Length: 459
Ligand code: 5GP
Ligand code: MG
Image (cartoon, rainbow, N blue to C red):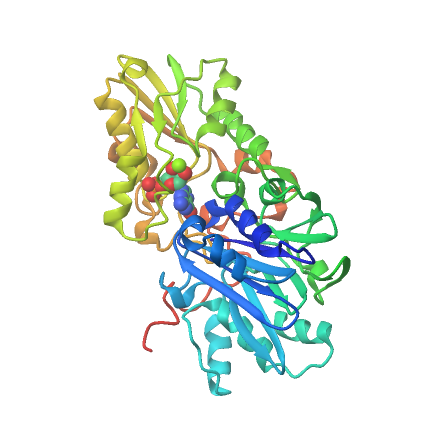
C-alpha cells in the first residue's frame, strides 16, 4: 500500500507535499520521495525509511518549484530497495513526467512483454514504472488523448498522481479501488490519498476524485474527464481501507472511517455478545471497533494494553524475524487491570495470526482469567491483488484453519468474527465494495503470475 500527494501552484510546494506525506505515513513506512518542477527543471529526492529519515531541511530546500508530487511506500510489488522508490521520472519528447502510484496493476505481464518487445529498458522492478514507459512511448500530441491512450491499457488498482511540468494530474481506476481526494488551500489545489493529509496542511476538502476520473490541474484551473466506459464500470472500493488501512480521522469512499469502524464493532456485539467484566482493544487498530462493541452491550471499556508509540506497524518490515520482534516491543499489558478478569478483546483483523496469538499470551501472563476474542471483519481467506499485502493463501491463517482451530492456535476461550452480511450492513452502497479477501470474489481478473517479485524473477 502507499500514500500519494500532489500540490499545484504553491511557493512551498515541497514542504506541503512533505507534510501531506507525514499525515499519510501509515500507508507506507518503507520509503518516501518528492518530485518538484521549478519552471525549467525537475528535482527529485527519494530515500528509504520514514519521512523524517528520508528528508531534512536541506533536501526540502533543494526541491524548488511551485508544483510537487510525493509518495510514501509499502512494498506490494518489487523489493524494498532504493531503485524501486517513487516518484519515477521519465521524459516524453521534451516534457519531464513524474508519477506516484497507489495500488497494484493486474495485467503487468502483458504490458511488460509488449514494452520489452518495443525495446523499453526497465530500471526498477515496479509495476508503476510500466505506466511511465507507456507514457513515454505514446505518440499522441493532445494531452487528454495521450493520457487516455495509456490509462485505458491499465487493469487493476491505480490511484495516480502525475507531475507534467507545471501541471499535476490525478487519476482513479474505474473501479475506484483506492481512495484519492481533492483539496484547496489559497491558490493551490492538492491531491491526496486521504483527507487527513488535507487537515494537516490546512487545506479544505473539495471532493473525492471519482472512479475513472482524470483531472488536470494547472494553477487554479481544473479540467476533468472520465475514461471511456468508466461510468458504467462496476465499483470496487477496498473494504479493508475502512476496516484497517485508512486513518480513522479520514473521510474516504463517501464515509467517515471512525464511524464505520465503531459501527462494525456494534454489529459484532449484536452478532456475538458474551458476558465479561469488560471490553478492551488491541491498540491502536482495534480501538474504534472496541468502542462500538462495548457501547452496544453497555459493558465498561478498559485500556489493558499500552502502545509504545516509537515503533511502526508490525507488517512494514517484510521479514518474519523483524515482524516477531516488533510485535513484542510494541504493546505492553497492564497487570492490575487484567488480573483475574474475564475480558472481551476486540481486534480489527487477523491476517497471519501472529499479533493475536502473542497478545493473548501476554494477557494470560498478566493474569486474565477468560479471554474472548472478537474480530470486526470476517475471516481473511484470499490474497489481495489490488494493493494490500495479504500475499499467499499459505500465510493466511483463516485460509488454512477453521475458526475453532484458530481459537485453539491463539489459545482463547472463544473466538468469533463479524459475518459478511453484518460487515456489508454497515456500509453505505455495500454493492460498491471489493471484499475479495473475505469472499474470494475478485471484481477484476487477477494476474496470471501472482508473485510480488514478478518483475524480478528470471531477470
Ligand atoms: P497478524 O499478526 O494476524 O498477521 O496481523 C494482524 C494485525 O495486523 C492486526 O492487528 C491488524 O490491525 C494489522 N494488519 C492487518 N492488515 C495489515 C496490513 O495490511 N498492514 C499492516 N501494517 N498491518 C495490518
Ligand atoms: Mg492491529
